[in-house]
Image (cartoon, rainbow, N blue to C red; front, side, top):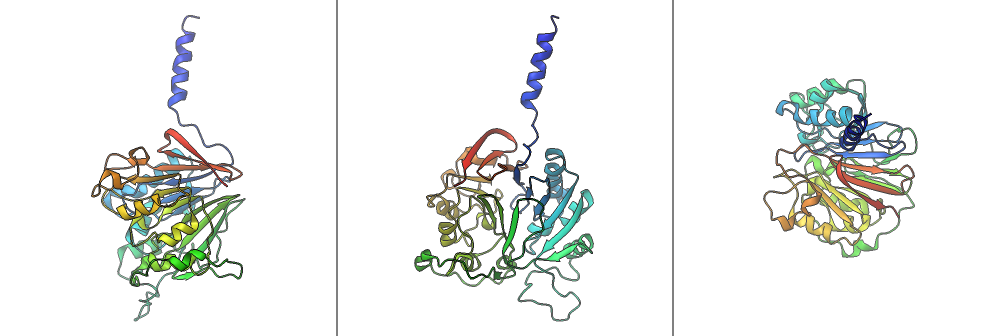
Length: 351
């Protein structure tokens, strides 16, 4: 009998350091650190997984391993149901080759592929698209063979259950409709920047919705492409969670888009020396709806005051690896944000 208190104490200690599984019915979103690339893993209440982008290639499969760690070790899932590639830059699709070796991927979604057999490929539509002799493109084609679909503006991912994933933009086109309201903020929009000829401007933009909760991921859309989503018509409306576009670069995150979508929480998938522009941080602070902003890394090239507060930066070590987790209640009425599944969970109400 005298050993029972000690055993009970050990059991309580073990329980306190063990990560408990997600509550049934939650929508989970993981912002995985791929060092200034992109890899956002969405898991629906039905446990259907959607990975948006796959990080960088090489580096000993660093990024695929980080993704698979969250998928298998944290979430206890054994495959990816949907992989969405927002555009053809290596920090967004380069991890596919390694990822496809480490886990099963059931379906691939992208904005289309150039005609690799044509002498004159679609250079305007695919300025940085995979080339016939491009190892990354070859790896993507091999992994996705017989399992890929092109997404266009207005399409929806075929998800089970109550989560809706709508494509707002793809390949330079935006969603059309007769019921979008005129946006009065456009009258005071800042001047346009020069046209962006890169694949960033062609990025797929997705809005996920559960009840009243909305999450917006614009890939790497740049200034003019972002503006088309909200001017002269507002095609998005207010959202709750904003993945800061283009890793927080200031040629993205158009002020009129930010003022229109009015997020409660912004999460930036920057690296120690990529993204995290001081100007973008200042723009976020100027949005009166913002209750909290997070970064995966501190921008090591700017002052501490030009980053979000230290407690909301996931990785103090520039080697990184820690993720940011968002958990949305089953009815979409609130969501919590936590760094790496540890410590404080800050909860936000959805209007």
